[in-house]
Image (tube, rainbow, N blue to C red; front, top):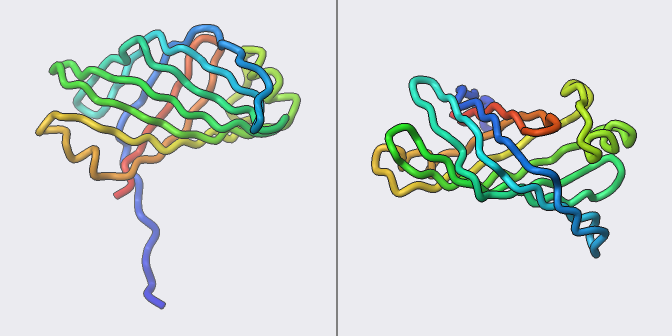
Length: 155
């Protein structure tokens, strides 16, 4: 067997995504469905910045009292005017009482929650096209009116 080293991570961006109150769809076949509209936000990378455009949403499936699957889709616009489509899939787990507080929109200490994500990017920008050819990982925290995340490029 080859001795392959684990890939290192390199900081890509910090995001602060402002959200509206959840739209509760209710108990469906696979779990409790929720849609959280995205109102806007800020992105800060190393040497670049962008804004999260309003109009996206986070589509959530609460699988059980401990676990939720998240699928957020939105667009960011760089200061240079380039548009980037983001699809960010995530897993969020915590003790049932902590998850219940999150679902109610209460502030929860991020150390009590496992929140990991895998964002994918698409853009028509020639200078940013490389982001569509890389893998990214992230970590995040839900606050009452926003989600904050830090994304890393897998080298």
